[in-house]
Image (cartoon, rainbow, N blue to C red; front, side, top):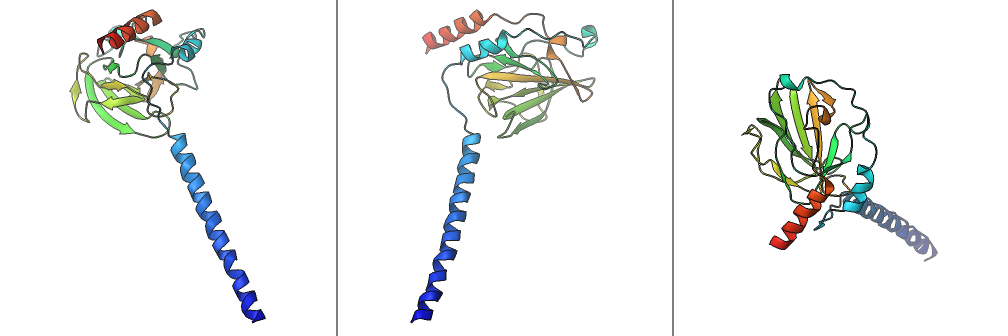
Length: 208
């Protein structure tokens, strides 16, 4: 009887390990889901992005002959720069309201549409020829597919909150022969003022 008691005493040990393993697995799963949580906001967090936008623009050292570009560059949409190009941020972030339509910076061919839960979220990459490519990230919706030819008037998709982002914006990344360049080296000199974004968003609310 005593031996039987000792043998049964070890049984809960394995059950305890199983419970601990199950709890650890559940905890890891929850951390993974929370780390990829995508909030669905109905308005842009303007104040947060304004703070970043007030940072002095870094000096432009890259020299690009705009006249030699195989396309006429345009902004993907209205907005203001919330994060500038740097060694740690190989593109610019153009903040605007959620759902704004994203246009390619120039005509070209869509070569990739993909989605990653980390970092850039839902992206579209367009090849413009002569080694130039543009990537648009954090998109909420994608309207194009791989291999599709697009013009400046076409819509690639909508501004979203996918990936790692603190608010609705488009991360625009431009590369030449595989090396990223500062988008401001080829884009129009000025971006619309933040008041334009607010006015447009107010008009959208009234229309709804």
